[in-house]
Image (cartoon, rainbow, N blue to C red; front, side, top):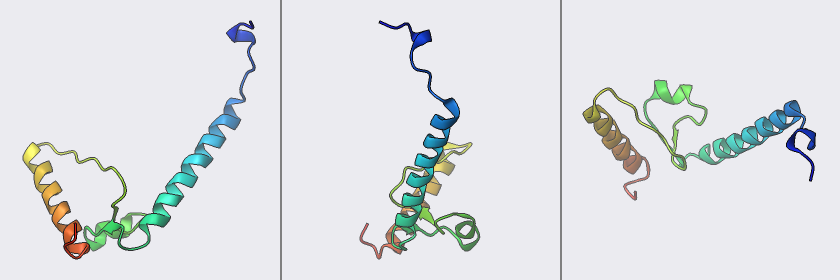
Length: 91
């Protein structure tokens, strides 16, 4: 059995380039899915303009960080209300 040092060495630059390409494809697919209008939650025009999907994508996991737990809970509640309103109340 060959030792790990003599095993086939991978071209690190090629592996990294392949991983970056795969991530870009995945992000592009997510952005295309979110770009269909209904699958984003509008926040405000200024923030939406800065986001790649022009809103917060629904089919994604988002983290909320705040100095105080109440602030994070309040933001999450407002975000859920906006999501329900944007979906016509069907959420």
